[in-house]
Image (cartoon, rainbow, N blue to C red; front, side, top):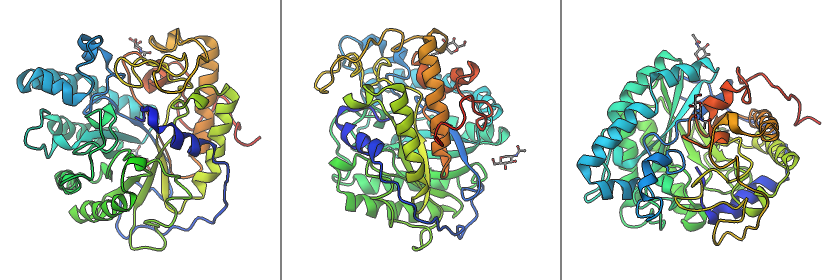
Length: 427
Ligand SMILES: *[C@@H]1O[C@H](CO)[C@@H](O)[C@H](O)[C@H]1NC(C)=O
Ligand SMILES: *[C@@H]1O[C@H](CO)[C@@H](O)[C@H](O)[C@H]1NC(C)=O
């Protein structure tokens, strides 16, 4: 989840970059067989957010005791404040209840074929002195069987790296970006190696591993990031050979910046998936867009996605057209949409009443109508290349982000190939 104020420039640039090119698509099949056919099938999936990496806005009830003091803002401070024993008890309960086998069954019944599962390095390779607790892997091991039963592929996504690769709460630790300092890159490779080895017997289900979620390009050395991607690729494919390797665009333009890197047709690298995240709610200009602007911006992405030189997914996106969901921008923080987010340069666009908390059923009929159009348009755009993974399956109180309930309400198509509002991107 992209949820930080200083990201809005790159997100905006991506959204409005209207220079679609029409380079021919040149792929060749991977040298090794991956169980999901990323070349010919569309990825249609959902993220299991807030499960193995806490995010205050997905499960505000866990963070409610610190809503005023704001001394606990992420999984790091949560475990640090509770201590190992209490944190272990609380999180074990959370892991066993937030997502269960029934969710995997429903996701399969909704016609999806992928789940993307965020996990932190601390699940497999905690560092000395870390407050984080473990036990996630036992639950994930069970979930492999649930996914197999539901015929779902898993994109396993390293969401938090030592030092934090982006400073977002969803990296485990809110604050400075200290990844690439000290030994953090090699520690990240160690975590990837352990994950890849651990699931090397399950590559019928775990079809791809994402090396690192949302490294904050503007705060990192991009050449070193590329070197990390190359060695991460060797690590993941060396473990069994049957995983696809997924790399995030680091908020650089997914087409103009990344074309030419790890290109399937021209380098030795194969089975590489580029992951780009497309939100339209993290800048003042984006939250001021009209519903038709949002649809047009989504549609403009389709031809750009089609022009990349490697498999490309939109691995995070949403139905939301505002940043009103409670604590979306961080625990205790306000929203751009109603002008309450400090230091964001935002001014009042509209009221967050009815958008910040509540259920899908509570959304106004206008909001439901606009959201359903926006979702159908994004599906049309993102299927112009390898596919998409919605953020997220469930939230406690952020209705526009709640795929399970959006589907039940008929606002997200089931099956995902059907459309209530077809052809929005072809006019
Ligand atoms: C399982 O999923 C794959 C990939 O989406 C699909 O090709 C296949 O038909 C599915 N099998 C069943 C039994 O649904
Ligand atoms: C989702 O649906 C469940 C079951 O109807 C309901 O209890 C919950 O409040 C809903 N949440 C949202 C955010 O829509």
